[in-house]
Amino acid sequence: MDRDTALASQDPGSPADDLVLFQKVRSSTERLARPLTAEDQQIQSMPDASPTKWHLAHTTWFFEEFILARDRHYVPFHPQFRFLFNSYYEAVGARHPRPQRGLLSRPSLSEVMAYRGHVTDAMSKMIRISNDPQVASLLTLGIAHEEQHQELVLMDAKHALSINPLQPAYRSDLAEAASSAVTSLRYIAFDCGLHEIGHDGQGFAFDNEGPRHKVWVDGFRLADRLVTCGEYRDFIADGGYRDPRWWLSDGWATVQAQGWQAPLYWRTDGDEWSLFTLGGRRRLIDSEPVCHVSFYEAAAYAKWAGKRLPTEFEWEVASRSVSVVGNFVDSDALHPSAAAADSGPRQMFGDVWEWTASAYGPYPGFREPAGAIGEYNGKFMSSQMVLRGGAAVTAARHIRPTYRNFFPPAARWPFGGIRLAEDAT
Image 1 (tube, rainbow, N blue to C red):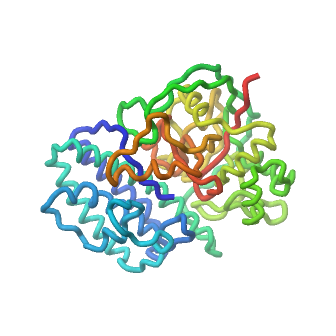
Image 2 (cartoon, rainbow, N blue to C red):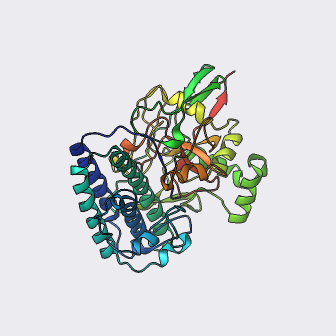
């Protein structure tokens, strides 16, 4: 889902540092798109996804609309692009229908790339000369916005390639991990207490990460690693998708309506399981974290296992005991990895987004920023669930312990996985 989010706080660097970061992020987006053919970049495989070409254009539109348009001397690249590549900003005006983005054969990919070059050049010039704090703030937001869309490029391209009977790889050079031993789940205890939750205002954050506020958290125990594919296979073998006892009502209705029998991208041929990855279809490796499950599947598995999902507050409290390091897009694996044989909470950051038991809503005192730039987080605070921690397709610099991702509970194309929790005894 395309979530254009608003700025809560920011800590801009020098113009030279800002320029280097801006150009690096713009180049990174284009590098992620490069393995895809022009035909690949045209496809919209479902209404929730967008073509790669559209992501390339929309992230460019953001800078043009919210920053360059402030300069009365700036000449837009194309007057109709303001309509074509607006996502959801009602205050900006009308836009092309989201489910029909894949029907836009024009502009061509080459024209979209020319659009990117035009805006990148104009932005680079503005960054060098501007001393406007609001421009600096919007630049920081625009960079974070583009990093969100880098992840969406990979999510959406993976889904589009997966429905092709040829099962083509996004990149054929992505190495397949070897099987490894799986350590038994251990549960780490955290004491009850009053905790401050949310971003502290130092550096950049999206508005939905604040205001910082106090939350009482009862004692709980959190699994020291993610649920593996092998463990999830046991749920399937035990009839998990055929037994309504484990499912929320809406989840069971979805299983029946959609015919779910396993996580997205899994396929079985007798006793042999495989899954589709950005490196193509591969054998299932039991030691890897299960990925591409919905909130409904995560909650059903947890109930079957006699556990539960953590709340987002429990997750944030636990995350403070580890560093923000992990298997992110920077690792270039583009796929979840098995847990290392370390002590303490493992895989808290990277690998898969972790579904929590928390509905996505406003923190106490939350106020949407004025104007179009504040539209998105507030109006999505309904019928969504919170995920934490980032994934193997998330930029490492994009993640922090307070980051709140969110998707509808039936969504399976995000890199969503499972960590179990239980009440302290």
